Length: 88
Image (cartoon, rainbow, N blue to C red; front, top):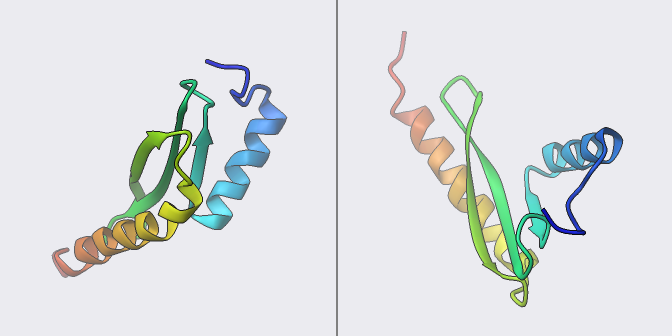
């Protein structure tokens, strides 16, 4: 962990609520100094969260600029899972 790691249940709950609302999560040096990441959720055919698709890069990169592509890729995987799901 680093000095940027989100500690405390209140701060963590608030951060997770924001991630859920935006469907995008960021980490900027929170786990490893010098790294940044952005991730988006992947959902199955029943619209359940099953995975996250993310990109990890150096902290010098602007992960905000990568976020739209990460979201599009995660959404595409979710759509593919819905289409390929067996029908009952």
